[in-house]
Image (cartoon, rainbow, N blue to C red; front, side, top):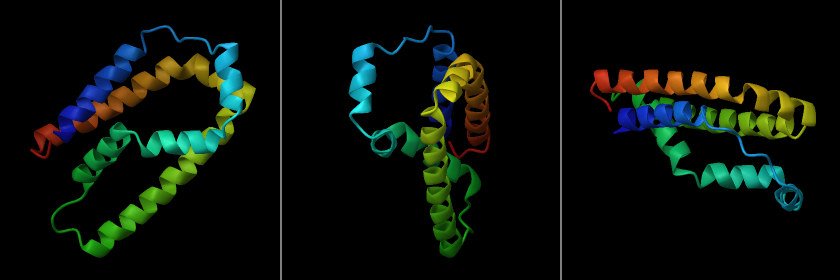
Length: 131
Protein backbone atom coordinates (compact mmCIF):
# COMPACT_ATOMS: atom_id res chain seq x y z
CA UNK A 1 0.00 0.00 0.00
CA UNK A 2 2.93 2.36 0.69
CA UNK A 3 4.18 2.18 -2.90
CA UNK A 4 0.74 2.90 -4.30
CA UNK A 5 0.33 5.80 -1.88
CA UNK A 6 3.63 7.33 -2.97
CA UNK A 7 2.57 6.97 -6.61
CA UNK A 8 -0.75 8.64 -5.74
CA UNK A 9 1.12 11.54 -4.05
CA UNK A 10 3.42 11.82 -7.06
CA UNK A 11 0.48 12.03 -9.45
CA UNK A 12 -1.22 14.58 -7.17
CA UNK A 13 1.87 16.78 -7.17
CA UNK A 14 2.16 16.61 -10.94
CA UNK A 15 -1.52 17.42 -11.46
CA UNK A 16 -1.40 20.28 -8.94
CA UNK A 17 1.62 21.75 -10.75
CA UNK A 18 -0.61 22.54 -13.73
CA UNK A 19 -3.15 24.51 -11.67
CA UNK A 20 -2.89 28.25 -11.16
CA UNK A 21 -1.94 29.29 -7.62
CA UNK A 22 -4.54 31.29 -5.73
CA UNK A 23 -3.27 34.62 -4.38
CA UNK A 24 -3.46 35.16 -0.62
CA UNK A 25 -6.28 37.57 0.21
CA UNK A 26 -5.82 40.50 2.59
CA UNK A 27 -8.17 38.91 5.15
CA UNK A 28 -6.32 35.59 5.05
CA UNK A 29 -2.95 37.35 5.38
CA UNK A 30 -4.05 39.34 8.45
CA UNK A 31 -5.58 36.20 10.01
CA UNK A 32 -2.30 34.31 9.48
CA UNK A 33 -0.35 37.05 11.28
CA UNK A 34 -2.37 36.41 14.46
CA UNK A 35 -0.92 32.90 14.84
CA UNK A 36 2.67 31.76 15.08
CA UNK A 37 3.81 30.35 11.71
CA UNK A 38 5.92 27.78 13.56
CA UNK A 39 3.02 26.50 15.67
CA UNK A 40 0.66 26.49 12.69
CA UNK A 41 3.20 24.60 10.57
CA UNK A 42 3.99 22.11 13.32
CA UNK A 43 0.32 21.36 13.94
CA UNK A 44 -0.33 21.00 10.21
CA UNK A 45 2.49 18.50 9.81
CA UNK A 46 1.74 16.53 12.97
CA UNK A 47 -1.92 16.11 12.04
CA UNK A 48 -1.30 15.37 8.36
CA UNK A 49 -1.82 11.67 7.66
CA UNK A 50 -0.02 12.07 4.32
CA UNK A 51 3.21 13.02 6.12
CA UNK A 52 2.94 10.00 8.40
CA UNK A 53 2.23 7.68 5.46
CA UNK A 54 5.09 9.23 3.48
CA UNK A 55 7.66 8.59 6.20
CA UNK A 56 6.27 5.10 6.87
CA UNK A 57 6.69 4.32 3.15
CA UNK A 58 10.27 5.55 3.18
CA UNK A 59 11.04 3.49 6.31
CA UNK A 60 9.55 0.42 4.62
CA UNK A 61 11.93 1.04 1.73
CA UNK A 62 15.14 1.29 3.75
CA UNK A 63 14.56 -0.82 6.86
CA UNK A 64 14.81 -4.59 6.71
CA UNK A 65 13.71 -7.25 9.20
CA UNK A 66 17.38 -7.72 10.08
CA UNK A 67 17.73 -4.10 11.23
CA UNK A 68 18.35 -4.04 15.00
CA UNK A 69 15.97 -2.19 17.31
CA UNK A 70 18.84 0.09 18.35
CA UNK A 71 19.39 1.10 14.73
CA UNK A 72 15.65 1.63 14.23
CA UNK A 73 15.48 3.81 17.36
CA UNK A 74 18.50 5.81 16.25
CA UNK A 75 16.98 6.31 12.80
CA UNK A 76 13.72 7.53 14.37
CA UNK A 77 15.55 10.04 16.59
CA UNK A 78 17.68 11.24 13.68
CA UNK A 79 14.64 11.53 11.39
CA UNK A 80 12.65 13.51 13.98
CA UNK A 81 15.59 15.87 14.43
CA UNK A 82 16.05 16.32 10.67
CA UNK A 83 12.32 16.88 10.16
CA UNK A 84 12.18 19.47 12.94
CA UNK A 85 15.24 21.33 11.61
CA UNK A 86 13.94 21.18 8.03
CA UNK A 87 10.53 22.60 8.85
CA UNK A 88 12.07 25.27 11.09
CA UNK A 89 14.34 26.28 8.19
CA UNK A 90 11.42 26.31 5.74
CA UNK A 91 9.24 28.38 8.10
CA UNK A 92 12.06 30.84 8.75
CA UNK A 93 13.00 31.12 5.06
CA UNK A 94 9.48 31.49 3.72
CA UNK A 95 8.73 34.21 6.27
CA UNK A 96 11.05 36.41 4.18
CA UNK A 97 9.17 38.14 1.30
CA UNK A 98 12.00 37.77 -1.25
CA UNK A 99 12.49 34.08 -0.53
CA UNK A 100 8.73 33.45 -0.62
CA UNK A 101 8.40 35.28 -3.97
CA UNK A 102 11.28 33.26 -5.46
CA UNK A 103 9.76 30.01 -4.16
CA UNK A 104 6.38 30.86 -5.68
CA UNK A 105 8.07 31.33 -9.08
CA UNK A 106 9.72 27.90 -8.84
CA UNK A 107 6.90 26.03 -7.07
CA UNK A 108 5.66 24.17 -10.15
CA UNK A 109 9.12 22.88 -11.04
CA UNK A 110 9.77 21.84 -7.43
CA UNK A 111 6.42 20.02 -7.24
CA UNK A 112 7.26 18.11 -10.41
CA UNK A 113 10.70 17.16 -9.12
CA UNK A 114 9.24 16.01 -5.78
CA UNK A 115 6.51 14.10 -7.63
CA UNK A 116 9.05 12.33 -9.79
CA UNK A 117 11.16 11.31 -6.76
CA UNK A 118 8.09 10.04 -4.87
CA UNK A 119 6.92 8.15 -7.94
CA UNK A 120 10.34 6.52 -8.23
CA UNK A 121 10.23 5.38 -4.60
CA UNK A 122 6.66 4.13 -5.05
CA UNK A 123 7.56 2.06 -8.10
CA UNK A 124 10.64 0.72 -6.30
CA UNK A 125 8.48 -0.38 -3.36
CA UNK A 126 6.04 -2.12 -5.71
CA UNK A 127 8.80 -3.89 -7.63
CA UNK A 128 10.45 -5.10 -4.45
CA UNK A 129 7.09 -6.38 -3.17
CA UNK A 130 7.06 -4.11 -0.13
CA UNK A 131 4.30 -1.77 -1.29
